[in-house]
Length: 159
Image (cartoon, rainbow, N blue to C red; front, side, top):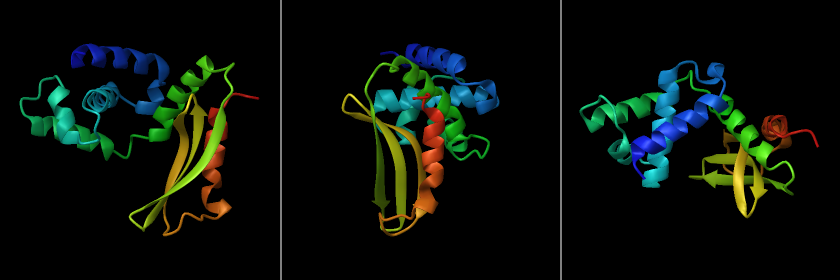
């Protein structure tokens, strides 16, 4: 698929699904769309590889890389605020489906633990909420991850 066509489709979906307040300005939304295009087409989280599918005024791959890198490290970009409306839009389509929730922990580099709640649907896990803690064990106290549960519950429709 042509990356420009995929980009236009993703921008269309994002603009009708995510409230403007969640991303702040269109430049951030456009960069998110290019990041999604890069991820889908290149099947890697390597920003350098994503630059091969980005179209725009930048003449050098380094400029595209800097744009993506700045977006990822921008404190004004709030992942949960962007992600929540996308998850809620998907859940509307699954209103009649039987789904499960899974609480999972993963230890990363023997230094961090990722705690996440995922919705299990058709054999796939869709992360709803997560937190990364500096912790050497997968055993985490409830008080440390209760915010993950609250954020996940806020995404789910009543019942």
